[in-house]
Amino acid sequence: MDPSHARPRRTLLRGATVVSVDPAIGNVDRADILISDDLIAGIDARIDVEPGVEVVDVDGMIALPGFVDTHRHTWQSVMRHGYAELDPLQYFDEMLRGIGAAYEPEDVRVGNLLGAVSALSAGTTTLFDWSHIQNSPEHSDAAVAGLRESGIRAVFGHGWPLQGDGRWTENSTLTHPADIERLQKEHFADPGGLVTLAMAARGPEMTAPGVWQADLALARDLGIRTSVHAGAYAHNEPVHAVAQYDNAGLLADDLTFVHCCRSSDAELAMIADAGATVSIGVHCELNSQGIGDIPLDRMLAAGVRPSLSGDTETKCSGDMFTQMRMLFGYHRSWMGGGHSSVTADRAQLFLHDVLAFATIEGARAVGQGDRIGSLTPGKQADIILVRATDLNLVPVLDPVASVVLAAHEGNVESVLIGGRFVKRGGVVLGCDPSALVSAAEASQRRILGRRAGR
Image 1 (cartoon, helix red, strand yellow):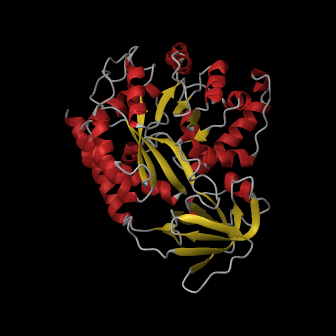
Image 2: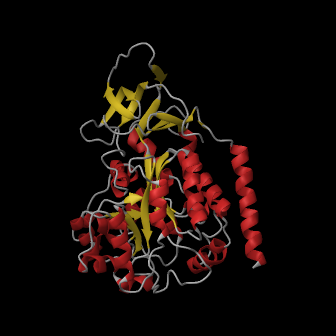
Image 3: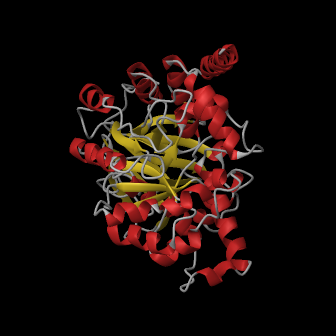
């Protein structure tokens, strides 16, 4: 996808049902959205513009902020949907050892391009690419190239190499790969660019004492955020990773913890007090036996409002519609089944909360809450247009309910990032779908062939 795609300086979206996720604006039955360059310039019932402004008729559509996926192992996109029925240990052994070690740089590029383009098509405008496939500097360069080629807004979470054994993940004494410093200088000189840098860190559950502290210090020296898995699976429960960060005086608002299924109530309170954030991968967590229950009731009681993620498409669907719909249904069933007794304060969950998890809370979790996540004048024009006239949605009583409970990728008419259409008329722009499919299929064959030959 060509990020230099020409666009008019000003664009007017005329007549949408606006779901702003901004409390000051709320939902508006019919409104115009004015875009100036890459920013939202205004939202009003009627905006008159001068000749030369592109006016796009969006009557019958719901306009909402682009979704923010805060944790996706995008490189795995060419190995989709093979692990949901299997023991999670088999996923760890195969994907994160044999298969991951068999990836070459071109496979990472294709995986990231496929995953990012499909995310765009389903309304995800910002993707935290949690990339633990740094087998060489060339692998990292290829991962960034795939994200940039797609045209998505992304945070590249630089992780560690997969080398066929546990040296990086089992009480590891290896500090974070120093190549992250080269990457920042070569690829991320502009901190306000479309693709930015973060650290995908291992944390106390994977490293020896002293290592995870050094890794976090490196990230902070580089001025970037850190995302770390915590509190997933029984063998990690005694580690109390969040508490270790807190006890060391290192817990702060630049940290995002992924999963937290087995994190204690005290740890969730620590996260809330520090202003840190949580990412939950709803569909994958439900499909991963042994990971632990999704602690949404405990998070809400502690004052933690999570973000959502597609995690790994090897065992789930990556789109945000799926995560929202499953989370709402899961929570209603969980609370209705008598589990509310585990919290002293039963926090109620509404559909607009779930939409906020997929938008503004995601923006906060990637450190961009002031730039994206809501339709607010002055923010980036990252906008989804959903056809409310489609048979599975019409007639709409409540646009938030329609989006969270029933909408899907096929209803996404258009997607804009920074005021630029990256999907229009139901078609992703700047991408040859048949060529991408062929490249993905060829990559999968190469990877499996190399693995079989080892």
